[in-house]
Picture 1 (tube, one colour):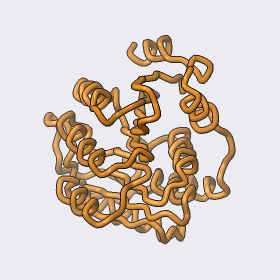
Picture 2 (cartoon, one colour):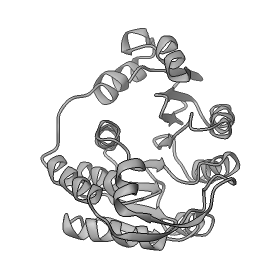
Picture 3 (cartoon, helix red, strand yellow):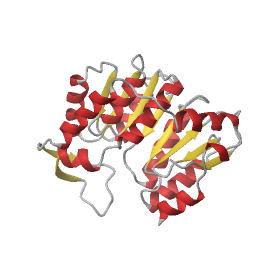
Picture 4 (cartoon, helix red, strand yellow):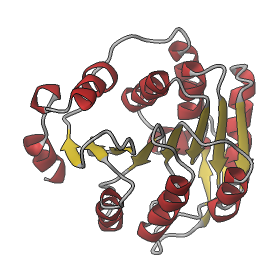
Length: 254
């Protein structure tokens, strides 16, 4: 029902009056073209979907009603927790649009979206954080197999690894927040990232309609003073800080 409401109330590029957002929706969200590396990355995804290894998973962002320490097959993670190609390709296009030099990802999982970023920006420094050490290890194996040498992976609780990373790097161009889908954590990580961002920075929040808590977090984030324009794609929320933009919030059909 919620997705149906989103579909009914969302618009397309032709319902957007901001020239910048019209261009972004037309050429990035609705953009075409495929990287020659997509097939290679998707072959790794396919192998992960058949991987019967069992990992000891530490989930710092688990729902309080669920266990945060459990065992799970790689195949289950690949089938149920990875971003579909449609969204991975969108993230690739955003990185191309940004001409990103520094990309941060919170939530590497098995590294599929990380590799889409790396394919878009082979000269960029890509820092991906993963809470679970065993999952991070599998992601690292995938990066090595695909010969992506510009990805730096760090495992541990984001409350520790994110502040440490932000003290060491330049302002990020692009950030993808795909981990710890709890209201307070989502707001806390956004505020920390926003404090280190420039007007050029784009932050993409995952699963903004995943739970009531995440819906509330998205409302709070949209109203932050530094946030100028947002785009709601139901699964993803895209945030712009550029002061030349008007304070506007769009729902775009994707």
